[in-house]
Amino acid sequence: MPLRQQILYLWLAEGALDNATVGWAFHDGTSGKGPRLPEAEPPYPTGLAALEEGWFLIQSPAPFALLPGAEHEVSYLANEFVFERRVEV
Amino acid sequence: MPATNHKLTTAEMARFVADGFLRFDALIPDAINQHIIAELAPLESNKINQIFALPADAGGPPQPASLTPLSQCYPAPSLLGAMLNLPAVQGIIESLVGPDPLFDHDFVHRLPAGSTYHQHLHVDAVVDSPDPTFDIQLFYFPQDVAPGAGGTRFVPATHLRRTRAEGVGRYQHLLGEQQFSGVAGTLLVFHHGLWHAGQPNPSAVDRWMYKIRLNPSVSQVRRWDMEDFDRMHNDASDHTFALMRHDSVAQILRTMQPWQMGHESRYEQMQRARLWRYLSDDPGFDVDYYHTRIEQRARFAREQH
Image (cartoon, rainbow over all chains, first blue to last red; front, top):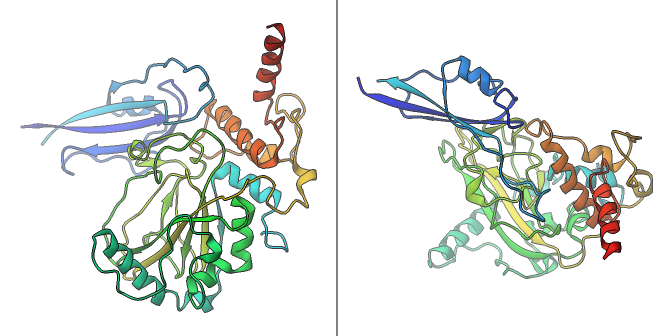
């Protein structure tokens, strides 16, 4: 049975995996044949809750050096955690 | 609700600084809403045709060029001109970008019934300058838009984030995002930096929206109705962790969106305070003392050298 990836991005309020989810994105390599996300919004209240439901963490954001003069700027959402689930189709 | 002279109040301006948008339901009268699509339709055709070097001969009003003062755009009998010249609309425009701003561009965004077009979140144009000046974009919906029927999606309070347009498409959902629905004649007024996206229109009705971007041609300082300004404008001591007011501009600027949890909100407050400093012409303004403590110490360091 071929394997396909499902990818889940969670943006958390701060840099710890058990912080609250504030944003999310889902990309489904199974074309709808695999399990779906919970219908709740957000689908998982924290990153830790996603782990508990069988997602595997594949990227965690590292703290980054602050650019002098731009320490107080706001830009992209910094706390981006990426998870995968491998599904047989 | 704007002041009796149609200009925005200090509280409304503070909400614009905090949220990056204001919404005015049914602001445009039905006498305009019910007939303006006959003007928007040829304008849409002409705009698309000129992009593809085809004859822009569908009729309708003459198209303004960028840099044209707004007062010279869409002269009578244009209904677009009538809409833009309504005292209620002029009051909003003047409060935010001063009198007679410059026409940047406009476009007719028609989503046909059944359209599956789905845009990623984006910021218009390119990443902007670091100074606090801003353009506004008016989104005018001349017909009712039912929930889910192609209303523009947007994320309140994203306007001060310095991002590139293509960089925010990765965010499929953010807590607190909105999709417009509302009655005919509703106007949304956006700071140019607000993240937004077109949405599918599964309804049986075409969704019409007219968008125009305006550039200030003068300073944007204190252009709104100042009647409540002295009461609401706080000094730098208004500080959550010392003594705070609950009736001040600072209190409005402290109000965060659901996606702005945690310590991140402190940096948002600093950016909002920076924009309010510009608009109010008060370089000492602050919210919760973040700028002030740093600037005080910086003065001591400068005095030593």
